[in-house]
Image 1 (spheres, one colour):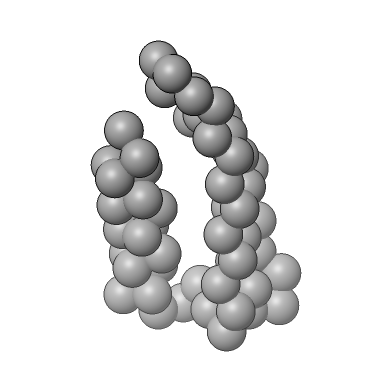
Image 2: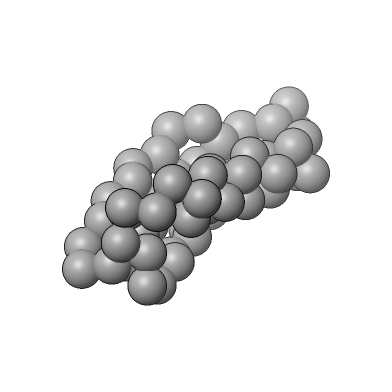
Length: 57
């Protein structure tokens, strides 16, 4: 996966793309009201992305 993450004023984003043997996928996830200070929020955001990738494989 090739992706770029970013955070600006409590908004966290990840956009990127990846390939499977049959397809190319483009994803963009934006989460509002995340300040980056809450470890659970960060883990949940990362878990969401990981689960999404597992489902698409």
